[in-house]
Image 1 (cartoon, rainbow, N blue to C red):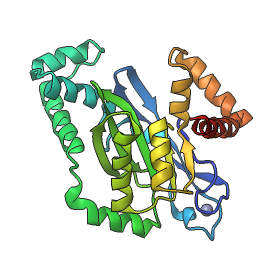
Image 2 (cartoon, rainbow, N blue to C red):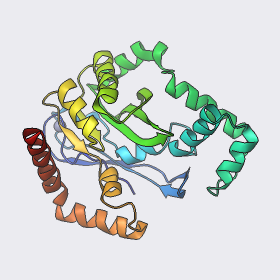
Image 3 (cartoon, rainbow, N blue to C red):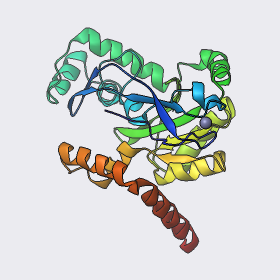
Length: 268
Ligand SMILES: [Zn+2]
């Protein structure tokens, strides 16, 4: 079960409360089949526009694209095999079966189309429509996913966490100079978000601070856990997640992390 990363409303600071639970959904990833669902939250303050909004788990939203049963990591692997290694569909199918994924050529072709559309900014003709949608819902919460690597580059996906809409996607390096223009593009195109959720990579922290000064930036719990220890078994992962939630240590860690970042900058 996934829960939103924000516990308090990014607009008024009141507690977020349950809005609804999503039905169970199966997502096939490179690491196996995930059966998951999500608890969607809203602001409990009836006078706040966050009361009619839906706050989502960045991890859940980041797993896949709308209408797909396969994870974004599978799409990225297919894209890399096809467009960087020039593999045929049959070779891609063989590559997938190494990860225990058995599918067919038509599905892979569909994924490759989605992948190409994603990295070529397929939404360009829809920007105005997306802008109006964001304005209508009263703003957006920017979610930055930069965890899927395609060979030497990272696939960055920028979404509105409230509606789940993909705002922008691009392949880029991991340095601030690589990430900053992407964040700036999102800022120029869609305006300042109500809040940001990311895995707090150095490059993202710096870019967000410059593009959106003063906007709350929340650490995605999933990425936090992933960074803490990839080697930890899944069960331990979940226990740790529950412990962290119960003991509210996350807030403390984020605070410490921010202090470390500041010190790092000061000491150059
Ligand atoms: Zn609120």
